Amino acid sequence: MIKKLREFHTAKELAELYATPHDHAIYGRGHGIRVNTTIQLAKDMAYQARAKSVADLSCGNGAIAKALGIEKTILGDFAKGYEYSGPLETNLRKIDNVDLYICSESIEHVEDPSSVLNSIRKKSQTLVLSTPIDAWYDTNEEHYWAWNRGDVETLLKNAGWTPDVFIMLDTTVFGEPYIYGMWGCK
Image: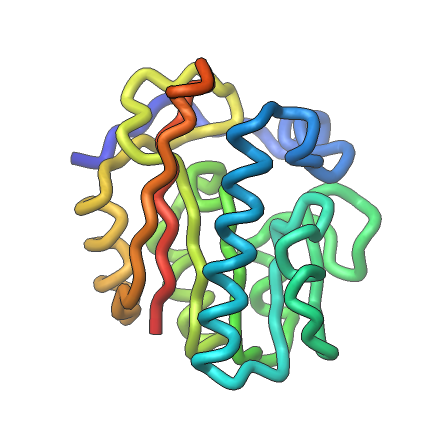
């Protein structure tokens, strides 16, 4: 069951929330482990896809995509500071197709996750996705959605993705609020 957690923010509120790019390093041990795990998954998916291009349009500080060492790396974020800044949904229409797309900690932040996953599918043959799962009582004002593993896999399949790899990371053992699901998809 996908659960809507809160009402959507206005454009002005979003501009204030995302005034600067997200830096995972300031959010605790779990975020660091999640980023490092996502990097390893992305390296494997890039290798399997023989990727020569990668995009991440909600990249925060860009740590995941930059760590891949792929020459054609397209970075963007809602916050200013990248060639592509502003809403993910808008920026997806602006980029060329890529071999690998990174969507890390993003779909819980958008109004229409299904539409975003469909748009990414049109731009890439390979996807690395991470999102909190089973966060039914999430108090993060930036997160609109809660879901479980099966819900996310249904969203992925409905968008034309085939989940190839799944990794779960439980950071609640550190006193942090999230269990993360990470998928590699073709």
